[in-house]
Length: 301
Image (cartoon, rainbow, N blue to C red):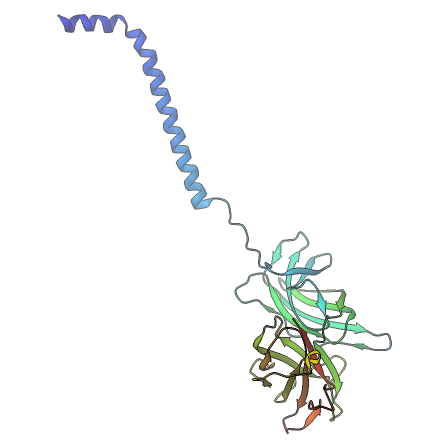
């Protein structure tokens, strides 16, 4: 009897339950659709989503100069944001006129200074792609002096050749990092300090580059010489330091040795250039009567 009464009650109020059922079903339907859409969106992001932001290959470098022609731009970077007399490590990026990077090119370059009555170049390396980078190239230039220089590039993109040139300003370094002189063999030499660029109270790795001026535009690396060093502190009684090692040439063409700096302050790194026959071409030993060589570098830290 009870079952019959419940059935009669449900049937008589069926219309009241039906709309609620429909609303619940609709809610579940849209909830499922929303969940499915969320999952699909998430999967799309994971699989085919936004492209990762390009890595900045010039991080830690400062823009020094931008060259531009109607087709391309060449952005020049250094660690300091400037070029100075002496050895300079230089980084380059080639870009389309819209700023997009070009990752496959061949470069050559030529630094030139016009002194009115004459023009001369500077020792410089080839330009190579930086290892592990896609768009960054590197090379070095040794500017013998500060002033206004012209820097010209020849490069290729997609089988076509292009040229670009502009003036660059080379600033005077705070301390002497390059010396030029005529040796006793009547040859003109350029000797540049490469390292240490961040000297410390320690026995520092020291690197120098030695060139001979073959012509106003040709500066071959000198082979199999020795660069003798004698670091002194003029403000501290001209005292020296122990454990220095004279610089000799290694497979990279540069000259390497050890420079002992026993305290912070101003140092003169006295130099003597010795050829492969043991002859001193320039520079003098330090004595009480001769406190400084005629060729030297300066370091202050």
